[in-house]
Picture 1: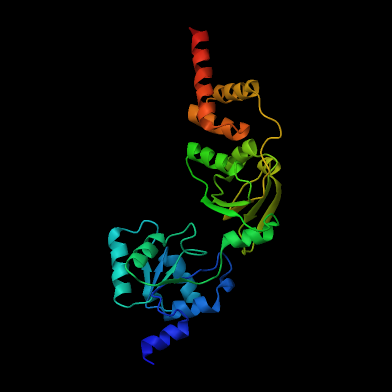
Picture 2 (picture 1 turned 30 degrees about the vertical axis):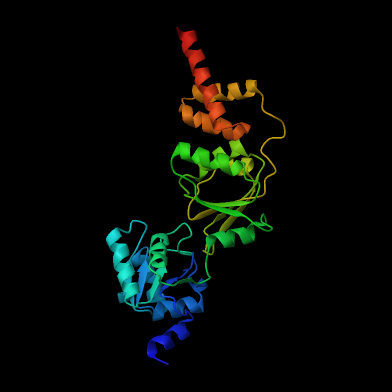
Length: 296
């Protein structure tokens, strides 16, 4: 057996040249033995942040000179360079700051390039905030939907939450601690009684799990810090009885009176009432027109 084939057997990668390697989401002790073997045996390691991955490699006693940056802002030139290495026979390990590459983390573009070029890709099992949060939540028995990061823009966020409120199955998402309070308030408008778990700083010294229903968690007066994973439990529906036109109009008037942008009003009221955003937006326009006529 040649040296190259022996290395493939030792690493357990077969003919794969691009390997997606999960890294710890907090506790460095959570890295797997196989991940260490692959990182040590790979020709190059492509990292989201070479400084953070460098700390991990130093901890594991692995040569840091193999590190190359490949983050979410990777250019065409970066991807072409990585593809050339693969086609030349190099084994590349891809890692992110924490967790599994390509799961709301960089790596997708290179995987697509490799597949198109006929390069075999494999992925190692390992650390993931998604599966950790799902397991400890007690809210998931069977399937669930992972929907990535909550959008930053207000209108996009409201559209996102409206879609969540229409999903009966458990859902998992990531959110920045800086925006979590605002997101929880918007969720409380759309699905106040839905079960929720906030998993914060998973596997770290200050790990915390908050359980309740969305309305109650949104009312917590506290500062949110650290990495946050949100698990929403199964949801039978956001409203027991249909919301009347009078209630919808009153809510629209209240939002407009507080200076909220018209499209955001439509998104919020649609999520709260269960009506389509197009229909609610039409009512928003009507209410604005009525206000103008009164002023005239």
